[in-house]
Length: 97
Image (cartoon, rainbow, N blue to C red):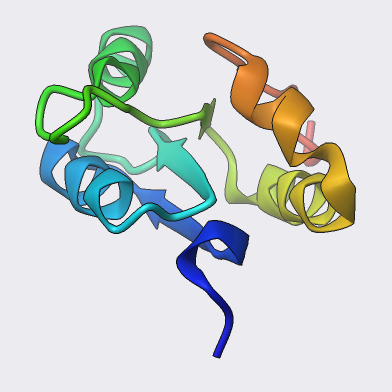
């Protein structure tokens, strides 16, 4: 298997983001596109705060549309992860719009 630093986690909860951060996952993608999430901006901010991780790390990027995930994973896989992780709050435009 791959080392955690080369893996990607996709999470929509503070607990999931915290677990991924504690596992030292390389890229944590927050997801706010589920129908039960009504305040997408507020939920995105919460995912990025890192309230449940030991070191305060939250989601590195937040998506509202899973169609955007392949591009984010591709950028991370080709070494673009530093740029993805360096963003404080990213909402990529939907690929389906």
